[in-house]
Length: 254
Image (cartoon, rainbow, N blue to C red):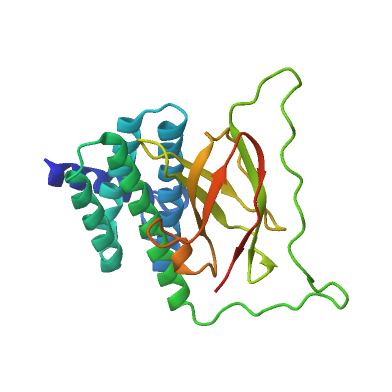
């Protein structure tokens, strides 16, 4: 049954990738670099949709099936990336040993992030040379710690606040880190919850959702971010969130 589903999903995905309005009679596969980027972006979309199902709707089964379907679809298309296929196989095998559906969804969330990281690392390794570093104009060199970020606005007066709000800046070796993804994973709840935010050009981030107070592990992914910050098993970052604003600056070290 799984092999049949895998083949069917792969066929559908190939049909989408091969379709091109300008060359319908002569479909062309994208080059490896373009294809890998498409996979990375597709898995990001799968992850985000699944995260909404998991966090906002508490539809753990829906999130699990979303993640499972995305991984089964992508796997046969990654024959040129055997390490990524191995990550998928390990993740799918691991969830078979889990009984709790929320835990299954969470494990496949981590599998998707691990596959995306593997593909990003492969693209960086295969690049002929890194892009040249452009020095800032004289007199505009970044100095000191990252700029402070104002916490989110307080709730309307008279409305008791029951959740935590999290914002701050992310820096790498004291330099603002733009374009990174900040993920917090609950450690205090029976079923893990995951929240995600993006850093802006000045390294600032702000979680849009109301977050239950408690203890969270913090993950940060992005270009040049050390691997130890990518997974719950290795990240040294923890936050203890209380009701109200929790301004938190994260300074990563290589």
